Length: 376
Image (cartoon, rainbow, N blue to C red; front, side, top):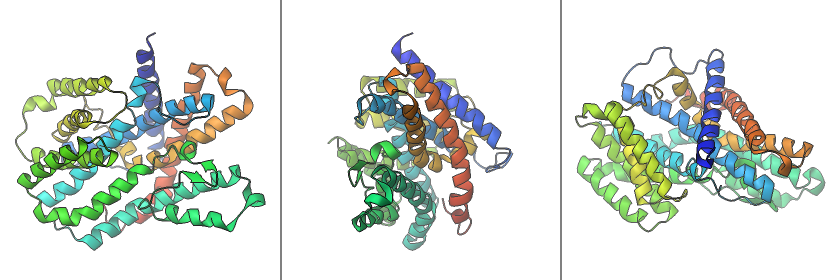
């Protein structure tokens, strides 16, 4: 079997198992209503969020496979899996830009204090839980109480910041990237967007949105991480404008699905490296979904929407679960002796456990803070 085909197969297997686990859990954790309501296009975006979180698990599982063989945390050599991290994160940024800009275009006022308080309630509790869990893992690995020093408490400041400060990449000589898959970096850019939003809201018009997208493209052309992130946010904002215009029927039907598949296929021209062109490809997919393309109903299913609800927990916790599973595997046999198929069986197990754990953390940690006031 060609390598790319095998990589696609294991990615599909992981997603399918996670979806089946979600279907089973929905009976005990009814996070979404039984009947869809409101704009079906918004429902598709909820489902998109759920699948994106699962694809990120595939990306980091592939990196884990190399890490446990070489001891070095670096990007995967799989062309398919290399994109399953950057592309979903780009779409997450677009989702953020779209959701908040849509409200502003609809005439909602942007009250800075209320916005930021809502974001604190939405982001910080789960972030701190995942961060402290990572901290405790590093604490055990660096010797526990026997090697404790008061200086280690300084590292908690960045963790308690809820993503406004960079998560420590090293906790007293213990590298944190393998412990949580380094997923926290994207939260800083989310916060930059929220901090800038009250200023951007002063000119929340279609013309200003196009200008912001052009500015974002210019920043992204320099190839910096920050520039690419700005462009992705602006593409989501542009999608909010386009969504308010009459949408051709073909966008929501099979031709539109074919266009989305073609855009994803163009990512093969790079190896996980985001550029203006990769963002435009993903932006085209996002605009199609925002305008009603539901991938033959996959994005509007109850299970996809349920996964969308717990996607933040999945995003923050999957690296921790992967580390725990792989560390237990390595403790029982040399990792180098593990076959590729056996590795992915354990990775799929980790994905299933992540979905179970995320349902619990959403119920116990996220949901209580979302009750009042309502946050986006």
